Length: 167
Image 1: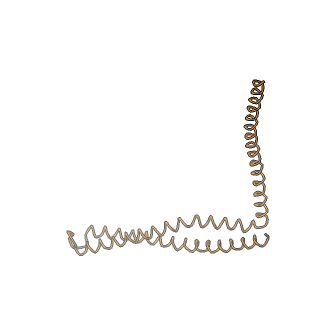
Image 2: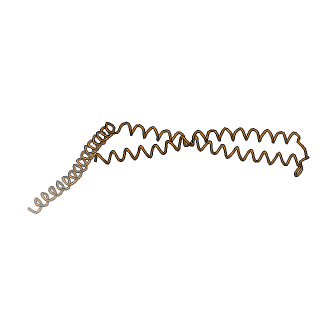
Image 3: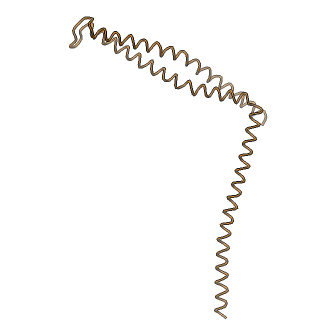
C-alpha cells in the first residue's frame, strides 16, 4: 500500500513539475506572440500617424527637411572656409615677417631684397590669394547658413503650432 501511494505521489509530482515547466514555456511563448502583435499594431499606428501628418503638413515637413539638409551641407563648408581663412592669414603674416627679416638682415640673414626675400614675398601673395578665396566663401556660406537656420526656426514653429492646433 505504501509503495502504491509512493508511486502515485511520485508520478503526480513529476506530472506537476512537467506541467509547471510547460506552463512557463507557454506563458513565455504567449508573451512573445503578444509582443509581436503589439509591435505590428504600433508600427501600423505610427505609419497611419505619419500619413496623416504628411497629408496635413506635407509642405512644412518637406521644407523643414530641405532646410535641415541645407544646414547640414553648408555648416562643414563654412567651417572649412573659416579654417582656411585663419590658416591663410597666419601664412601671410609669417611670410610678411620673413620678408622684413630678409630686408633688414635680422639674425644670420644678409640685408637686401634677394632670393629669399622674393620667395617670402611670393608666399605672402599666395597666402593673400587663399585668404581672399576663403573670405569670399565665408561671405557666401555664412548668410546662407544664417537664413536657413532662421527659416528652420520659423517653419518648426509653424509646424508645432499647427500640430498643437489639431490635437
